[in-house]
Length: 205
Image 1 (cartoon, one colour):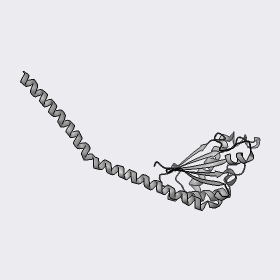
Image 2 (cartoon, one colour):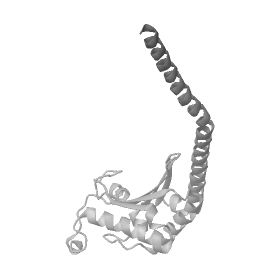
Image 3 (cartoon, rainbow, N blue to C red):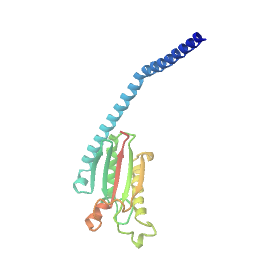
Image 4 (cartoon, rainbow, N blue to C red):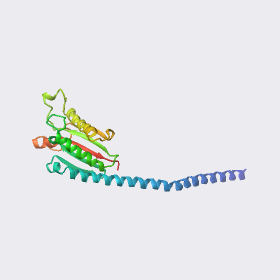
């Protein structure tokens, strides 16, 4: 009886060792493939970051006049994100969501520079206003600043799709109204800075 139990225990231990060795074998065998995948992913991230940097350089060159006039700013917030701020006075008439001729020309320059960015990069468009309420004459069209800022972001998205031929699935719009000021709303200069369109070009890097 003892001999039988000893034999059974030995068999059980051996089977456990075999299973452990088998798992170890598969882990070792799969390692080169996993390492290759990681290297490829790392290479893709580096390529995307380089492409984004090239897009930033091109934006700063093509929009240098707008940047000099302080109607546009181009910032690289991280290796994977570009922020372009376009002031309302360049893009829209007061209380309107119709893009001006100068605004359309600037958006074309922006879209041209995106050719250097990764094709997978998404574009998030955020509209902003100052804290002054929408005038009574425009209430029938824009209920409040939320509606106005969203309409402006949507107008930019439509132009980038129809006028600059970007893929709609890459675009996302937001309307923030007056909730995210970057300057004081107590002065006209501050309010002018707050009335803006922000475009974020973002990758998964």
